[in-house]
Length: 125
Image 1 (cartoon, rainbow, N blue to C red):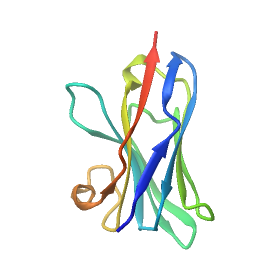
Image 2 (image 1 turned 90 degrees about the horizontal axis):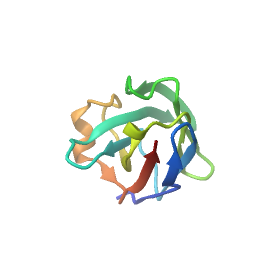
Image 3 (image 1 turned 90 degrees about the vertical axis):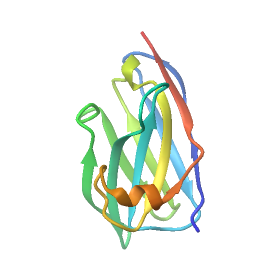
């Protein structure tokens, strides 16, 4: 069992930045960030594989490429999402997830993985 706790959400104006954090109680092979806007389906934002403290196979949604960066601090067991040049369409609840299957954003393994409670990001124009 892995517990995930997100933090760092908030309200920001368009063009601003936020850094989300996700503290994990254990380690898994794949970790990622997902988001869900009101009335929309949950979508993958960024994910990667972690092995022996190093990251591999980074995946990003097209909508965030070049603006968001996923990273991790293995010593702190913490996952991060640096979000720059934020847009109003980035407004959503952001969730941290972890699982030990395949790490692409569309992998069905995420459904059976571990999820945090979410942190709200609101971007105003």
